[in-house]
Amino acid sequence: MNFIFMLTRDDRTIPNCLEIIEQITPLNIRHIGFKDIGADFETLRILNQKIQAAGAASYLEVVATSPQAALNSARMAVAIGVDHLLGGTLVEETLEILKASNIAYYPFPGIPTGHPTKLGGSPAQIHAHTRAFLAQGCAGVDVLAYRATDAEPLALIEAARQALGDKTLIVAGDINSPARIAAVRNAGADAFTIGSAAFNLSFSAANTLSGQLQAIVDCVG
Image 1 (cartoon, rainbow, N blue to C red):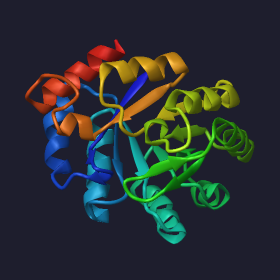
Image 2: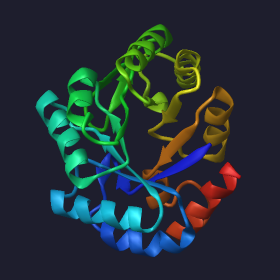
Image 3: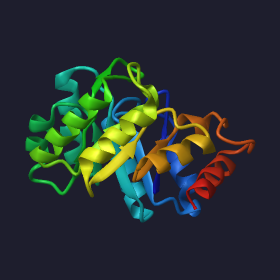
Image 4: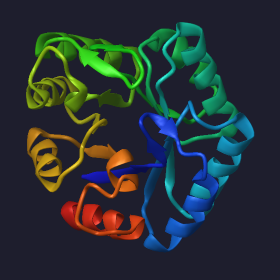
């Protein structure tokens, strides 16, 4: 299972993301992401370059709340050259934007709303959406399991896993403890994201960001 470190807090890219990426490069984290909100285009372009120059895969997660803003974020993903695009629900339109790129797309199944994003929907809806997304050509899905409002988080992960076959299941949002990492692994996730818990120094007893990240990496094994 892969750990995707998000340079984000409260669903926004952190203002000092360029400084932080320099600090964490020696930790050799192989998957690093950011949100489409919180920093301007040029900052995100440079950030993406720095992530890829460090030998890591880059991820942009869409949390914009309007359809047009979400599609603009997909266009930004192409313009800055990220490796993976997470989130959003306008799958057909997003895939059309991405078709000339090599970007792998993982939309949100269910009913995401608001910012910070909450996730509505039942396990049956998550399963149905996931199957439909795969049929359209997505690489997998991004499930906001611990933001769920209508179902148990693990039930949503398991529903997506059943629908995905060998495609990729990413679990994002509010993964803030070793117990939750173990739970999402056992439910079938291929990757998970953590941002706020590391920056808030709340994942472990470590009092530095590097200590928090090491504690997370140790959970992955």
